[in-house]
Image (cartoon, rainbow over all chains, first blue to last red; front, side, top):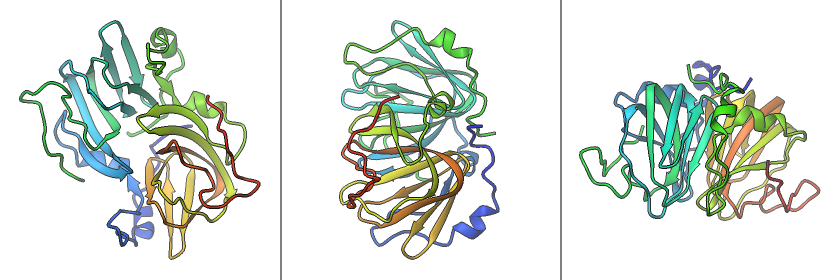
Length: 145
Length: 145
């Protein structure tokens, strides 16, 4: 069924023969499991891909984040392991493995995870993790994995 | 492990209580397995989400597509079931369940799948499936699921 489970590590021996193109864009296959193994902190998105004006990011959540919104950016949260809750001011949306939720610009939200959850984010390069809020959880520069 | 396998159907009873926002953007959770069950044809992407200037699409591949490129759009292919091969003019990249590949604008490519593969696409709304080529496989209007 729909899974991200079976990507075999040995496949990369065969397929990782490329590298960057002339434009510097990575055209190799990217293995999500491998990327998430390298994510050691919660609430710290890492850049794992670049598509047009957006980044693809890998992030682990556990606990509560902060209420915030993004003035100009929609955000997509795709759960690849575990379950998260996206809190909106009027309701919660449970997002389980194999599901995504899109938070439109301007909408206040707070991600919450009782247990560790692995999330792939798609959002414009301009997106700041805490949106309109600046505090100790704000990250100005994101690492690339 | 990283999977899209375990999203339980019964969760939607609880979580599908929302609907569209005032702006018409869907803020419910979207279940990939459920969407793919509704995809009946190969090579016919269906719109399952909208993030900024891009669509999220669900598509099933089997067999060979056509060589083409996109003048202005990068495309991301995330495999959620099965294995596909992205052919470039100088090499092939194997993309397995739980992996993605990004095809930069201007780069000729042809997706190939020996067995059925389920792919989530992220690409600008302007993207035509056959890129610079117009033939019987070109789709001008995509259905929304």
